Length: 440
Image 1 (tube, rainbow, N blue to C red):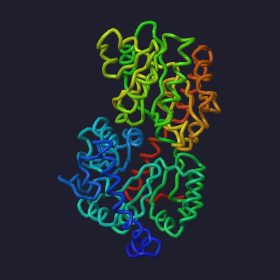
Image 2: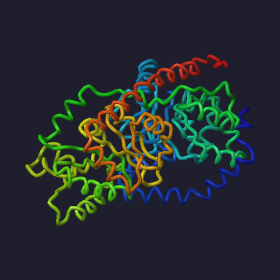
Image 3: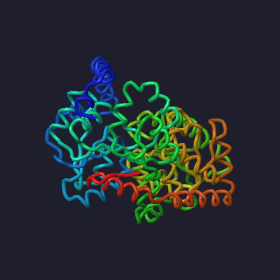
Image 4: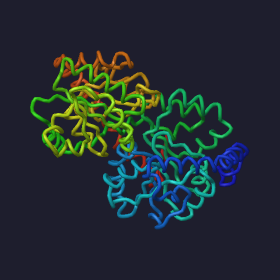
């Protein structure tokens, strides 16, 4: 495809017209989000391609969107930075939580900034300033202007750890007037499953450019100090379960299940970790109301972790309002509920608790990790529940140590059997960067 073909055809022109009309609303949404969450205010100009200090020029550009993608991609990025040298990799995100994870996991081994929104002026300004060597996108980040501009400039484009649900594939089919040219631009698409790979091929991607490598999220780097940190947090005679990555609409259900479970497990503590810690004020009101007139207290993670006073060590609910602390809490917990699944958000990553041998509980909405949950459920490592059955599932697992142990062992086996995707992904990325043909 020529540069002219890549950046000028009727479908793309229509997309760009729609974006121009949407621009005021996009900026208004960013302003509004900044009011609700002040972490969105700093560096907002970067989203329009304006940077106070230029990030690394000529680097391999890795776009990881948010915290989950950053955590999954971090080992691959770290290995790439070690191979290519200092300032050789640029990592962009779209969310402040993703930005924080880049800083904590990768430090100064990579450059970092926010990616530009998919407006033509912002994307072109970014490419002109950065002039990346290659563009590597994670999972489902298919942005027409971004990808087509890279292709027009002769920059290799890859979509790694790619996934494409049946629903998304139907959407791309409906918008083939735009998606066909965009998908043709990819030089490499390493997919999580054969089903995902086949859907990309059916949408017109050259089969030679599609690989089935597995899910890199199975290749966790578990810190050596997880157990030590967990033991330091544990209180004698207390039992723990965790509700991780919860969203609005789920916390009330989780808290009610916890209060019900306390009747048979009075020493039980809920570790409540919302997906977005900036919702702390909202959840504080919920917890105040739920515990009012009850012989149970709640506290924030910081106070509980340092045992600020005797009451915090015995509190029945700990609100986790910090990032990067979940792994020891998963280790400490007897049951792990993974949120975004009782509400239609698609569920979040269950691999971390599964890797630590914890029985996993999820709601019915798991389409973001459909194959992972299918593998866990098939191995009897995960229970899928509804709002009404969460309490009974929780109480049942807490009262049956044999079932918990069996589910946890099965969960860790699923994770172990799916490792290896990271190295396979790194190998095919290196092949593209070196200019070698992928072949059949």
